[in-house]
Length: 157
View 1 (cartoon, helix red, strand yellow):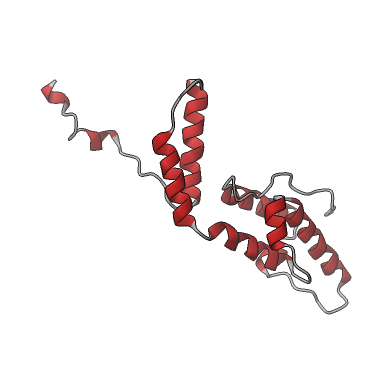
View 2 (spheres, helix red, strand yellow):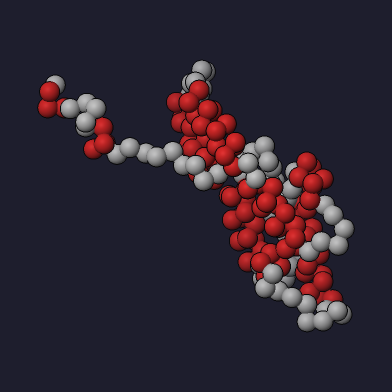
């Protein structure tokens, strides 16, 4: 049974660029509680007095509002919006300026220094940046070892 206390705990945050991962988690959460239709618009009330549907709609909106950073909440919170409206507005906020975010992340990848990080922490930091780039549809192309053979011909060594 769906319960208002059964909400996901992670926060959607523009600064963290975590939309794609949390979007998937949130959809899974809604699927598990059989309320995914409130996010995709496939669930509609049977009539103006469908209190069960309205209750579930309110719970999904509470989950959404409870998993949005304070900054995003101020941008998204409006009167008389559906869970679908909140979901679409949230996606639009994260999808705007993808190119600028990609440039910023690419710069972060190029300028990363190991400093006093352990090699594990350094590699994890790189992986996070590469995952974030993929999340804004700007994945870093990986060269295969065969691609490097033209740069370093081993037979000449």
